[in-house]
Length: 104
Length: 397
Image 1 (spheres, chains in turn purple, brown):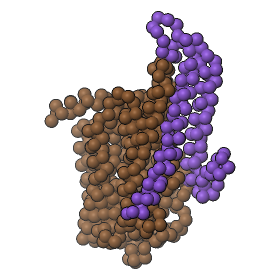
Image 2 (cartoon, helix red, strand yellow):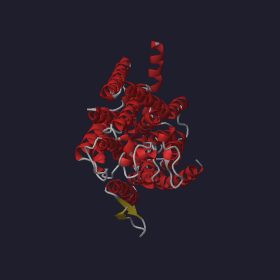
Image 3 (cartoon, chains in turn cyan, blue):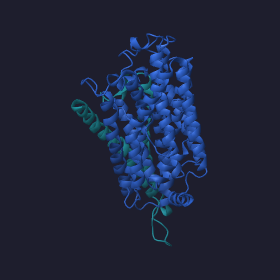
Image 4 (cartoon, one colour):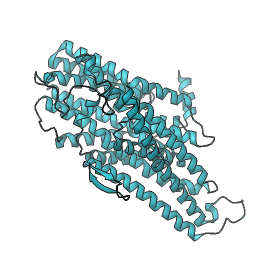
């Protein structure tokens, strides 16, 4: 019982940490992307006083928005690669900072 | 002959596994209208199919974590196959019947309980009945996370909490970041985020859960001597399991989808995105770390967390309480059914015994199906207002 609890807690905090980065960080980035796009589009995409025409468009926002989405997509692609790789007995290693596929 | 019954029953379990767990991936997308109900289950079914085929890894030792019916290399214990494998087949069959029965009952009640717990519970019960208390691997041998406690109970307690915390943080961040953006604009954006994250959960589910049935069927084949390779799974087993879990997913456990999507929390698109992302992240990282868990527990924890993280959101704690009750009872209840089935099968003996418990399963399944028709939930009314329907149901009584 004792040793299992130790192992479980050890795994649990890792899952929590990775989960916070991927599971909460990526959605937050996605939200940032949505917000940037709204800032980029201006007008009715942002909340503004009724009757007045909304804030003007900011092209930089559009660029930043798509940059955020690109990072999120990369994260998702990494997730899918991980599923596929582990199915074939491989794992993803972050040894060289950038992800590489290695044998398990 | 008994082998055929075992295979049919195992595929039956795979099927209930599919429709029981559609909700985990798709409940939020359906509730927020990101996808139409029929489209959602179709997408989830296809991804489960793909996921199941991706699981090339041999899942033969899946039951080793909880019961001692196999050697560590995956072959069955020799004393269990001494009589042509029938002792082992009866344990597997009784265990599967326990798992299916409990899955159907919780579906009837619309409760998202864990299919893995139902399967493990059934196998544990049948093993206790057939082999005694020592037939169960309660605590592992101390070298790694193992046994009923390490592989089933501890992850079951921890994973919903972890997923809930992540989803709550995610939801809170999203709402903070998008204040000031028009509602229509965010909803459209988050719709796509939701579809993407829910698809990831479906894919992960296919790779994880279909493997369990593949392992069980292959074990039965080895027990009777019809298959000897412990490194590979026969292709037809893989194909059958993949198609069955996908078909089950496509059928959709609408009752459970309704509870998760509408009953627990009133979900908005940003919450849906946060919940599914948290689920996907937790499922993937834990399978990477060998931390076995139930997709159901994770998804429920995430949805609950997304309710907690949104300021002013309505969380129905009474519904959550019922779910927790179902989680606590799943393993022991499936174990009791598994044990009773083993005793019945053993008392009658041989082929007749196996047929008898198979027929009992059919009878129980038919009864629960008929019960479900009294108050059907399908893709038409899955999103009806939760409280209004409750009152109607109460008025009926």
